[in-house]
Length: 171
View 1 (cartoon, one colour):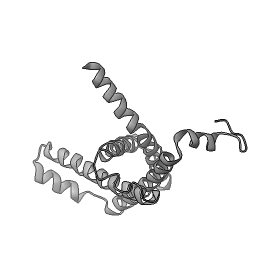
View 2 (cartoon, rainbow, N blue to C red):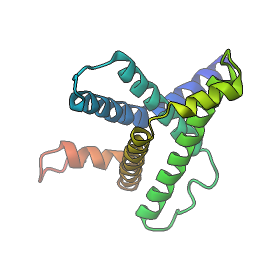
View 3 (cartoon, rainbow, N blue to C red):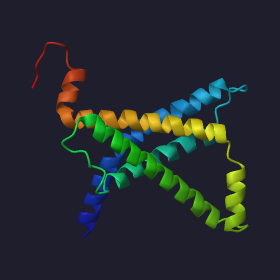
């Protein structure tokens, strides 16, 4: 029983690793860029922690979305269809998980669910929220296309193409 649990967890972590690392780097670069563009140029540890938690959330969204029966709807079609469809599913899943996290936070608030939820909505910086969602959508599309291409070409061939000298064939 313990071996099955460890095997399951190892598999889940392996499935989450690539998207989590990709979004960890991307989100932290966005945090760094925003800090450098701000007037005070201050880097906040809280912002980097939020970016890291966001990357973990996106990794979990990938894990959950890949288990949905309609995620692989475009098998047998051009890769771009499946990649864009997957990116849309991942985007929807990240929104659902983010809302669930917010609702859970509001439900555990000491001032009551409705008060906490209203206060939370009132404090949203909508322009920043929309920019973050646009970046998330773009990064999800880039990752989904890269993942589809890697699956089609094969990880070994990707390593060979990108890490071998041109003209050498080390199969």
